[in-house]
Length: 246
Image 1 (cartoon, rainbow, N blue to C red):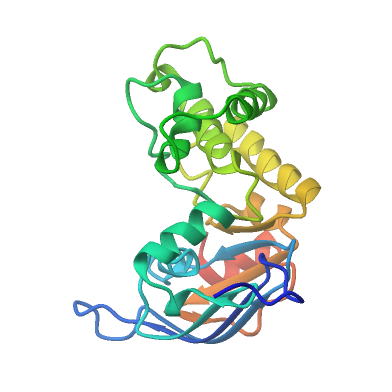
Image 2: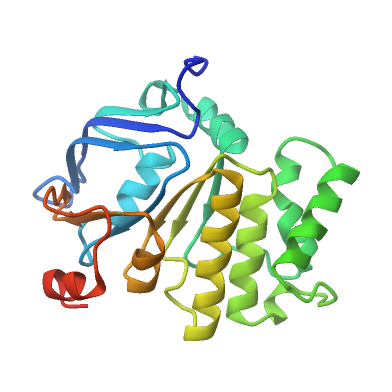
């Protein structure tokens, strides 16, 4: 299925989403409707166990769902085969994992270029140039022979560069500042928001970090798998403290 011409590929329309696990009594996610405009910067927050990471994986087609529609640009991920979802992710999505998922023993540059090998025997010269440009932009010391030798903040910036390699219209970051110190976390927040704003990219950040919530243009609150419909477009750190005891 191809995207509807009038709907940007990075515009989300979610309807009647339900995800349940056999080990859990109530559904992990039960969301009637959620719309995210193309180019939005959205923070998804809530207490531990509220379904934030499950929602991120459902929105990216990694987590299969029991019911509902997840439409990006008119394409319903729930109706695609597993291989078609994989192809859709490679074309349209950048994903930043909380634990980076870098490959030990590879240089920072080789880690950024790793997704290229899904489509070709070796990266193109243009892809190599783009990877070097991203690492330079993110101030990563590329001379290190192993990405494992980098600080955690530097490793997270390598992971962000990898996610941005193909200039995706959608970027999803799962707890991108969770394991970083205050300075590194602030740098990552600036990188995520600034690069997405300039590119018109839809940015969805799963987070407990009130700094990320403050940097986003919209905050979505989850509680026990449901949207908090009382949330405002911008939610203050004080409000989050009151709701969730951050």
